[in-house]
Image (tube, rainbow, N blue to C red; front, side, top):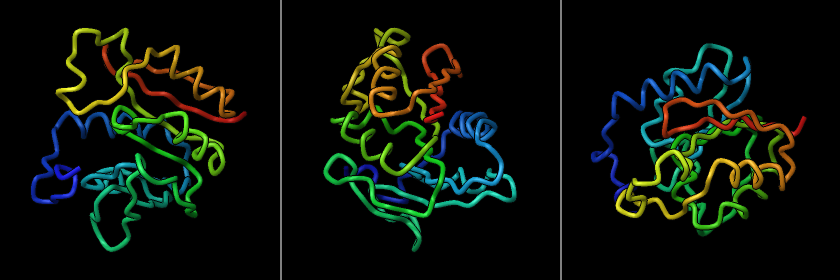
Length: 167
């Protein structure tokens, strides 16, 4: 967890900016976005006018940041109406628990994930990733907690976006 807590060590990969721009294009207008794993809060800087922003991370990024370790604690209540998680699901030990808490608060959201079938040779543990699911397994988990509509967009060959909603 220490690597996430040091602001001066955050380096924004230019590829993350492109990923964030692609993700933002999938967010409906006027939503108040909960940025789960907000890191350097790049999402806020890229959101078009009319969106709200709520940062959440394992470490404080500014005075607004909701600080919570989602491997240890439940997702706290917020006034956001759209959940966004770019590059965070890979770090959750218990994704079903996280998704149950997510479904209790949100009707829709967007997550990225590197599904196992698209990156089988990647050393997930060396990257700090603690789970390895196929796209089908992740879709089934989303659906099992109530997100009946799961739209998968291949962002890159080894990275998918999962646009989830209850309707």
